Amino acid sequence: MKNIKMQIQGLLLILMISLPLVLIAQKNKKSKKPNVIYILTDQWRSSALGYTGNPDVKTPHLDQFSKEAVNLSNAVSVSPVCTPHRASLMTGRYPTTTGMFLNDLYLPSEELCMAEIFKADGYNTGYLGKWHLDGHGRLNNVEPERRQGFDYWKALECSHDYANMPYYDNDDPKIKYWADFSPFSIAEDANNYITEHSENENPFLLFVSIATPHFPHDNAPDEFNNLYPESELTLPPNLSEEWKSRARKELRGYYAQCTASDRAIGSILDKVKELNLWDDTIIVFTADHGEMMGAHGVRPWAKQRAWDESIKVPFLISYPAISKNKGATINAPINTPDILPSLLGLANLEIPATIEGDDISKLIKSPNPESDRAALVMNVCPFDLEHEYEEYRAIRTKQYTYARSPEKATLLFDNIADPYQQNNLIDNADFEILKIELDTKLKKELEQIGEENFKNRDYYLDKWNLKISNRNHAIDYFGFDEGKGIVQTPKFGILD
Image 1: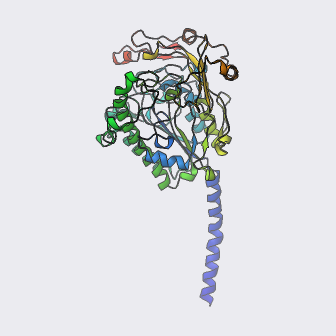
Image 2 (image 1 turned 45 degrees about the vertical axis):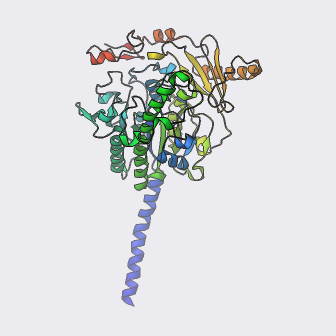
Image 3 (image 1 turned 90 degrees about the horizontal axis):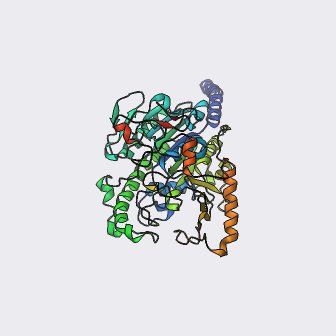
């Protein structure tokens, strides 16, 4: 009897000691900020996924993720090309505010960026994959002081040699190469990072930048190419006759890269679940811009244009306490500058005054498919093979696309009645009132960033002291391979 009494007293003592520790641990877990995993792909248009209705492409992991996340079905790229999108994403600012409206520019270190904001709040930061914000040559090392707040680093400025993808490893200045098809190698390193930081008392921000399915489309492993016989691929009705044959060839490789990337991303999602981090982590899957793939008579590989093939991107987001919102859809557009403030809102972090985008975290936490807003899209200076096209500013709502050049209105589509944007209503007198309404909304968006009377490209090139090369009608990144590259940054113009 005495022994039983002593055992009971011992158990009570253990409970008295351990219960406060458990409560403290639970309190610390609740007070810890959420981890953030941001998965950015390259040139993955929103229509090239199973969950968005594509009958051909196989994306089982992302299809499953769409059931566990909120789907922002009308996400757009503020300027649908690599560097302008990435600069806007990192800063929450518009290309006309930063001057980052061309590829291969150096994003000035003075800009306050995503990792710097999270790091100031105690986050560990890591970056993997394609960067394309350094402007010092596509194969040159992005020196640590130019990494905008990311500490852990296995990345490269820009390459699309997926079977032999180079990168730089943290402080090592020697170039290395991913061992496998790059999406798989990058995902493996992401999983190692997540595992190593899973027990850390500080949260982490991990940016996973996968360069697929950007062209060239001939380098996915055969396992994935064999899934897509050209003759069995479905072509959209807005594909011009002249590009049908080439589009089939490109689509085969494009979809192969999508499926390979889907598997890589699936391994990251599985790792988060395996480590029981799902309920403590914000996870985003998206892309920097789309791909024209021959639609509207525009060549495959192109973007920059205001059609949905170019501007619309997938956007899935999961977050702690998502609960009943799993699988919900938001039809109101989210724009690139809105992403950073919305992530900060979800993480309960202060939003810096420099950010121009809107925090729509409340809408993400309370999804309403009937809500609407206008997303401002722009091409300040068409470049490369697209240099011959007009500059534009446009808005995308959940139903309409409206665009204008500096001289006149050019596009008006009802994207619900006309999902392939084959019927331009801009000169249809029956839609004059709608045209006026949308023009008013566009001007309102432009006024908010001081651009109510936007101008042609030469004005912005002169304003930011940027020089376009006659060789490629763009920033001449080839010069770095020849030992005579010139770094250009919109903050100070050309650097010596």
